[in-house]
Image (cartoon, helix red, strand yellow):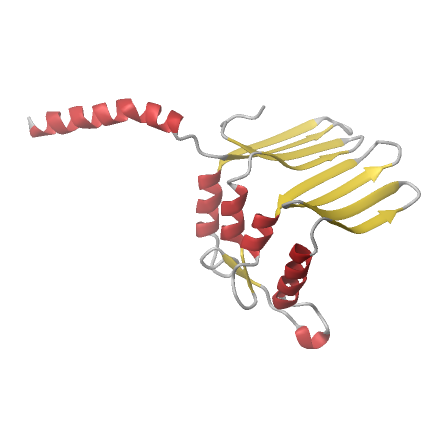
Length: 189
């Protein structure tokens, strides 16, 4: 009898679970790559952000430890280390809205800018055959650099990315289309 009551209680809890899950939708990471060159190919990846977090936790400690990546700097060799990047990032944040880099070549324009709370990367071919759009909130970069020493915090950055909705990266050219976005739907749109 005790077992039947326990099973009945479990059934009632499970019956209510879909409603609770529907009310508390969690973010999903979507990646879609379409290639039309040669034999057309399409790759779609749809993952709940909880799986992305779990994968970070499961990564070998050599690669990621507690969600952090240790970067070995050879500062003596003139290389930049993480502390240098943190200082550069702090100065970028202080600068306000700015076009940092614009490279205009014969066939394309590349720009890196800070607009409001976003870092933007743009690549545009003059003939319209290629376009890259990356819009990254400054909070993601802050989270990435939130670790100390020679470590960057990938887990914190992923946590910030999970708060986003909409396109994060969009790349198109004559043969390939790449789109990375976050929403609360398990299937691609």
